[in-house]
Length: 240
Image (cartoon, rainbow, N blue to C red):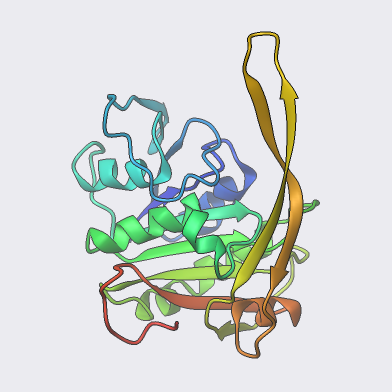
């Protein structure tokens, strides 16, 4: 199987390297990922400037654009192959419930589905280190056929796994997206150039605790897989 790996943490991230290693034993793995971090860019695309692609190694490339750009480029001939599946991640941090609105990781998987290719977003559900990706990467490699079997053209697949040691074997449950409320804080200061500068600071995230949600699964130490509608008007069996 020909697999495209991408992410929103950048091509040098440990998460995408763990996926490449885990999947590379049985599959033809290609990487096209942003040249630096693009977290929180959602489904933004580079419409008004050219995209630059740089070859880093055999089957490994980086791009000046967004995660969605990477999938569009790979699907429209910028690389010498067409992917059978797109795996986006492993993200450094969770993409649970409402996070999907903002996530570049999720956007890459969504774009794959919009292009008619199975898209799988993968995230490590912790905000603090150590970020241990090996167990989650192995789970994706061992259960890739299962995750693809959940895919239909109107959805993408979103997987979150709690942090675990490298030899851990996850129990995987199907879940629905939780609702998360972000209580962000801002810090301001006036610069000497006449601008007021605003910085997002770490804020609190409150989650509606519901049995069967992805947040509920993570809280129980389980890996959560969710089928997420790729199109606002799509109908079908995706969880809501």
